[in-house]
Image (cartoon, rainbow, N blue to C red; front, side, top):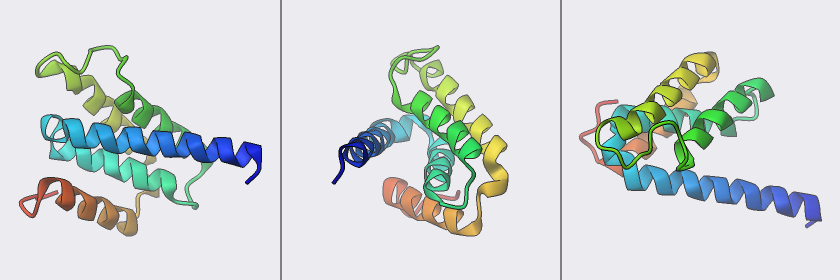
Length: 121
C-alpha cells in the first residue's frame, strides 16, 4: 500500500472508530432521533454518488459530534449534547436531497442494533 493511501486509510479508520465510540457511549443520552440523523449522515458520506461539497458538510457535522471540544461541553447535563444535536439536524437538512431509501434503510437497521426493536424512527 502506498504511503498516501495508507495515511488516508488510517485517517478514515480513526474517524470511523471515533464516530462509533461516540454513538455507543452517548447514544442513549443523545436520543434516537439524533443517533438516526447521525447515521443518515454517516451512510450518506459513504455513498459514492454524493457530491464532495455535501460530503464536506457531513464531515464537518460528524467531526463536531465526535470531537470533545465544542461550544457546550458534552458532560453538562441536558444542554451538553443539545448543540451536537442541532449541528447534526442542520447538516441533514442541507444534504437531505442525497439521502435515498437505501441510506435510510441502512440507518434504520443500525439504529435497531443500538436501541433494539422498540425504535420507531
